[in-house]
Image 1 (spheres, rainbow, N blue to C red):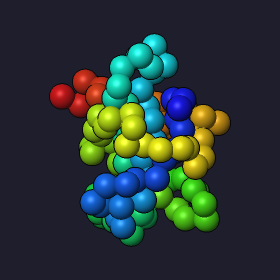
Image 2: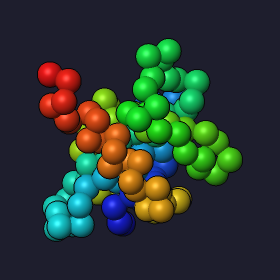
Image 3: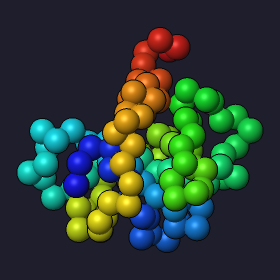
Length: 106
């Protein structure tokens, strides 16, 4: 499993959050957990969604949006096999995480 791999969400909220994307650096592959960011259905975004914080992607014919405010660490065994990769669009994911963690506004 690699950084920016997309996995099906096997958790309770899989209807509204069908996928998660691994954002953890490969430097930490030795750990038994992975830091992931939910990819929520487009319809689940509030009217306050921000294009830079919540970039949209197409995964298996479904539009989903990154939701960094719900970032979480999960056991590696819970992720299963990847279904896609967003490595080619990693700059948008990193920009969203920068937006979340930046001190520019506060």
